[in-house]
Amino acid sequence: MELKKKKKKNGFPSAYSVLFIVMILAAILTYIIPAGQYSTLSYNADNDVFEITKPSGTVLEMPATQSTLDKMHINADLSKFKDGTINKPMAVQGTYVRMHQAGQGIKALIMAPIDGVYQCMDIVLFIFMIGGTVGILNYMGAFNAGITELARVSKGREEIIIAVVTFLIALGGTTFGMAEETIAFYPILIPIFLKSGYDAMVGIAAIWCGSSIGCMFSTVNPFSVVIASNAAGINFNAGMSFRIVGLIIGVVLTVAFIIRYAKRVKADPSYSIIYADKEHIENKFGITGEVEEKEERMSLKYKIVLILFFLTFVIMIIGVSKLGWWFGEMAALFLCSAIILGIIGGLQEKEIAREFINGASDLVGVALVCGLARAVNILLENGKVSDTLLHTMSGWVEGMNPVLFIVVMMLVFIVLGFFINSSSGLAVLSIPIMAPLADAVGLPRELVISAYIYGLGLIGLITPTGLILASLEMVDVTFNKWLRFCWPLMVIWTILGMVMLIAQIYL
Image 1 (tube, rainbow, N blue to C red):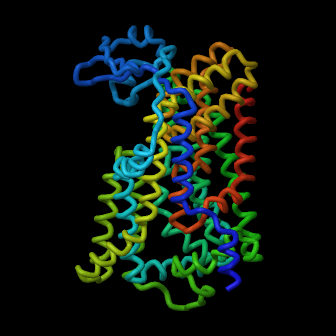
Image 2 (image 1 turned 90 degrees about the vertical axis):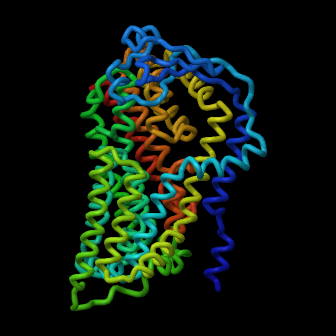
Image 3 (image 1 turned 45 degrees about the vertical axis):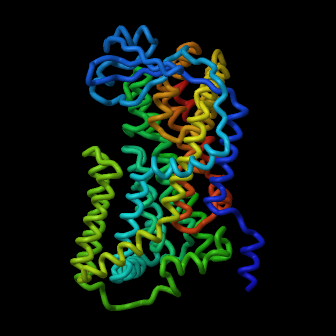
C-alpha cells in the first residue's frame, strides 16, 4: 500500500502528456517566433536540373552544373547531387526572408498527432513487427529459457554485458547512425539486465546512451557526418582522427558511468532511481525471484530458435548498413522471422497468429509516442520557425573569437537539434549556412561538422522530440527519472565535446 501511495505522490506525466505539453509549447512558439524561410536547392534527376524553391513557392530551374552551385554559394560537389548522396533540399545562404506569421491554432494542434502517426507509419509497422516476434518467443518460452541460461553463465561477470552492449550499439551509432533500430533491443536486453540483478535503467542506458555517444562521435555515419561534410564541400575524413579519439573516450566514460550506477543498484536495490517501479517492471518482463540454479540446459529447439532470432538482428544490421534497407525492409524481416520461429517452435497456425497480434498490441503505446513526437516537428515546420532560429543563431556566432565561436556553435546545434531532430535534415538546412562562418573566423570547416554532430548527439540523449520517450515507454519509465539518471552524463559529454573541439583547433 505504501508503495502505491508513494508512487502516486511522486507521479510524473506519462510520455503522452509530456509530448502534448511540448506540442502546446511548440504551437505557442509559432505565434512568438517570427516566421521565415530560406530558399532551397534540390536536384531533379529526371530533367537533370537544379530546382530553386523560393519561400513564396516559386520554383526556378537552373543548369545542373558546378558553376550553378558556385553562383548560389554552395560549396558541395556536383557529383554528390547526381549520385544521390545529397537527396534533400539544401538551404541557400543569404536567401532568408521574413514571411507572414503562420501560427498553429487549435485545429493544427489537434491534427498534428494524426499527421504525425501518418508520417511515422513505417516506424509504427516496424515496432508492431518487433512486438509480434517477441510475443511468439515469449509464448513458446524460448525467451525465458535463454535469459535464465545467460544469467547463469554470466553470473559474477554481469558488468561485461553492460560494456559489450554499450560498445556494440555505439559502434552501430558511429558507423550507420543506429538509433531507431534500437527499439528492437529493449524487449530482449532489459530482461537480461533484470535477471543479472540490475534495474531497467541500466538496460535503457546501455542501449540509448550507447546509440547517442556513437552518433555524437560519428565517424562514417552517412546520415550525419557524411552528408554534412558533403554539404560543406569537404571530405568526410577531415577531422576523423579527433572524432575517433572522442568516441573512444566517450564510450569508456559512458560505460564507467553506467557500471558505477549498476554496482550501487546491485548492492542496494533501493538506490535505484526507479525502485518504486521495480515490481511492476519485473512483472512486465516476466522476471520473478532470484535466478534458479539448474543443471539442465536449454533444449535443442530453444537453441535453434534463439540462434535464428539473433541472426535476424545480424541480417537487419547488414541490411541497413550495406544494402540500403529502411523500415519497410526491417519490418518485413521481423514478420518473416516471426513466422519461421513460430513454425520451428512447434506452434500451430492459430497460435502464431494469436500471439503475434498479442505481442504487437503490447507496443501500440510505443508506436503512438513516435507519432506524437513527430507531431511536434510538424507544428514547428508548418509554423515556419526553424529557419528563423537558424538565421538568428548564425548571426550570434559571426565574427567571434575562434574558441568561443566553436563552443557556441556546438550549443547552437544543441538548440537546433531540439527543433529539427533529424541528422540529415539538420545537415542540409544548417551546414550550408553555418560552414562558411568558419571561414570568416579562420577555422577549417570540419570543426563546424564536429560541432554539429556533437550538439545533435547531446540533445538526442534527452529531447522529447526524438526517440527517448518511445524507448522509455517500452520499459514503463517516466521522463523525469531518465533526466535524473542521465544529467550528470550529459554534463560529462558536454565538457568532452568542448574539449575535443578546442583540441581540434590547436592540434
